[in-house]
Amino acid sequence: MDTKALKDKYGDEDILFVVKKDGTLHLTSRNGREEYLYFTGYDGTNAGIGYSIRKIYAMFPTMEFFEIIADRGAYAKNCGYWIVDKRDDKWVTYVSIDSLANMGYTPGEWHQIKTEMNADATGRFILTSSHEYMPPGAQYGYQRQHAVDLRLQLFWDKDARWFGIRRL
Image (cartoon, rainbow, N blue to C red; front, side):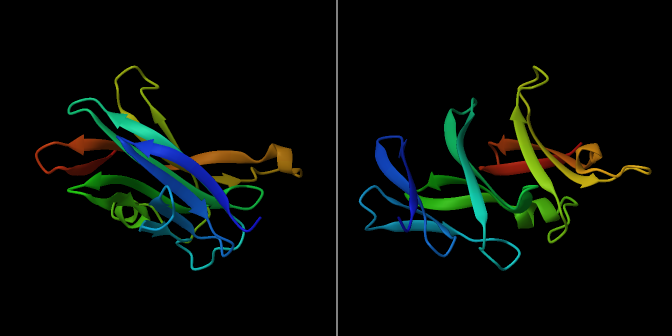
């Protein structure tokens, strides 16, 4: 099989996420005839990319988005991040690696990105970037540690009608 596909719904619309043989991810209509967006590795190569796609929701106003995290390799080096949604009948990217870079993320360096919603019972959507390192005296891979290098809160700014980002 040349592609991997994920069927989903956005409101009443049937959509399809397809990973092509070249490693790019495409968001299309269910029948594949209309391409809405495509995603590619931020570091210039698509070799070995894996994509994680999930829906995220805003409460006030009620909205749904897709979060896409791209990584590669045994230690899941981040190579892409996007939050997308349909606005005025067109798919748009609200948050990307460039947005994160404006807040201190260092593209091209080794990071893992994880997000969590409401983990601290405040309703916040938190993005954490971390990197692995070997502490002094460590000799084996299982001894590696993670150090958080950036924590951000992502939120829907209803006045701007766009995602806001706040450094924590």
